[in-house]
Image (cartoon, rainbow, N blue to C red):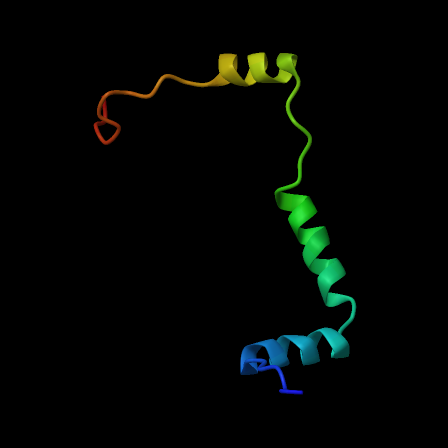
Length: 63
């Protein structure tokens, strides 16, 4: 049977994951902290919309 090719990068990742099994759990925890969030309730959406300030036509002027 012919050996399957694995790139150097794939080999590196496999070695890294075998040396540090907690690495993937840490990545998932970091993702959950920044990205995986519960959807906003209707009330929260209403308050966020009311709290927005209107942007000026030219944001770089000192008026």
